[in-house]
Length: 551
Ligand code: AHR
Image (cartoon, rainbow, N blue to C red):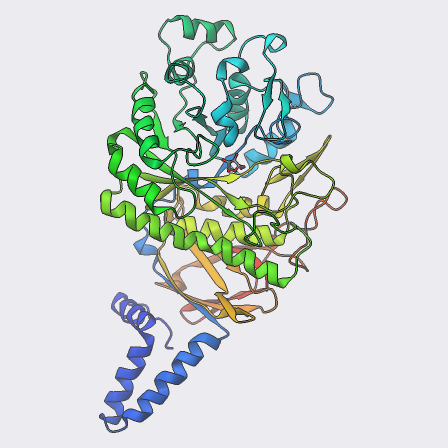
């Protein structure tokens, strides 16, 4: 393939050839042999198609001048539930703890979350949200009722961490709160009063109560979930029934002055198109800001035996990546459906629970969902975030499940110790994409072949930030082979390569432990060279790379 030239016309020509490489080749061949040797063309086509599958180099074509769509920073959101040791231990240690804290909130965790610029935090669940009664969690902590967390191990919920503590946590981290209200077992009045408590500055009995509890001005929570997984733990409803309930509950989720609510309907389980279509048909669109979607990557695909977080072979590695990459298909399908009912793209798709879900660590409470986090998780996270970026016209928020000590966490704690997982470092690398403009790209990649199956080895996304820097995040999921990636971008020679960072490790199941907390972390990466008008990057096996250029 010819190198890109500098003029714009040629860029498009090159793009066309990139898209239609086989036909271009055929066309040129026909011309050359003046239609005399069609059989040669057939041979060439066959050879090209074989080459496309077996090529050992990936090619990416992108034009930074075409960056338009904003990658919402909210795609890089987190989710924290009253589940296992996420809130209690992970975030909340109590005011009398010897672990450094601000009003009971552990400071090491706050600092770590600040570093990755967490933009939004979803709380209090999850399944817990539909049995949470907010009034239990405000007022004098010693007088708060104790309840039972029936979803997650039947443990006693002290309600020590409630509305004020959550809002303080968000303030410390510098993120926006996203609260999931209780539709499953709560009343319309209860939900409506919670919003008044949070968002109104008007004098009323409810807002006076907030003032007595130490908060003078309204917090102005921007994001509001009307129920959670209403097709499952949130009430086992039909979509038709939920759509009716949504209309009723949402009618009483009021906008107070200066605090317009972005209301989010409880959307499909994975790729359930019927659920999505019913909501799109039965709920007036002006009543919603977005519709949620939950999808978890279960390594074996079997919820009874999900597979270990660290003890897995290549078969399970491949299966995990395959199931993780399925997010792309889900978003394609759901976005296509949404486009039919909402062609102007007013509604957001909010992937407010996603991540790898494995068996719990041996010896831990099965209901606490505590799992380790390996390089494999980092590759799934990085690939998923590339997918979200590519779908940023529709996906305007996503929340990793979950933040600390539960499922695919970014942080694990053990008493006073804290470690950052490989997934954390992916969020650290990818924060450059937050609120940047997506640079559309076209990608040709070799395959990672395993047994009779294969996956595209390289995935990527690119953006331009507000300072004009160009960032490309690349993932090579092939655990054995390093792969050169040729980057062709318009006016490539006018861009100056600034920096590269690499996340990888010796083995796919390596992880950070309390004994070796820094085994996996980003390192400087410089295997990038300019060749004429393109750049070639040598992607190590099983790696994530961030590259930055400036004009
Ligand atoms: O994240 C764990 C659980 O997964 C959440 O509580 C629920 O919404 C989902 O099924």
